[in-house]
Image 1 (cartoon, helix red, strand yellow):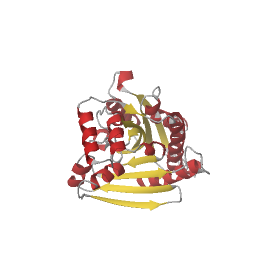
Image 2 (cartoon, rainbow, N blue to C red):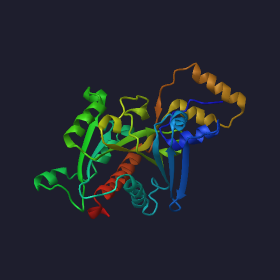
Image 3 (cartoon, rainbow, N blue to C red):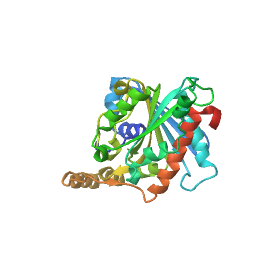
Image 4 (cartoon, one colour):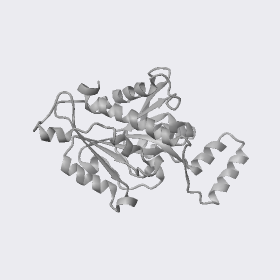
Length: 294
């Protein structure tokens, strides 16, 4: 029986679908970096894969990291370097590298504040290139940062505001940092997803808006996301999974008769945002400024 789970993670979508049907149109490769960190790369290859996953063709990389909340031995540093290794494959450094780092979300709403908190920790250098009239550098990239807030605060469509900033900055690549939704609550403190297909602002909160992608911005777009919320319907269905068939039907019937449109997060969300924003910022700094942070 198919279930209407909400998740922004390609790895979770694949795990859900493989229980219900034979999947084609994608490849999956997994590897264990050490006892705490694993990497899974899912590549959606064609229209059949797009239809099955509900996501555009491209590469979706998932890092699963154990022990962040427990502050296991150098886990944040190891996670940042593992993430940087994946980012370097998508954003090779060169003398003229110019990047814009965008933090989506509302800084005043903790589960939605990952983007702004991350950009605040990224080393911004574009003003230095202007001051010293440099066209490039071998140690650091030309990096701008921008936190556009959300439409409910600014009254402006976030994607359109970013388009205007891209026209001004003219970057080679845009990095988008955003909060995501997951199916499994354990992923809220363990998971980072990177993809080369862009992003839809508000997707994690069930409020999809205009996409931010190479098609809309005219340059490469790499998104980095961390699941910080779970849809209440998804949480209930996931908890009921594995119960007797009659119980599953009762749960489905219960949810169909009630309009449950709530978002759930972890009691540790403040620490999760603090930890993951630092990990992502460190990884971005290593990738864009290798002469300083390598």
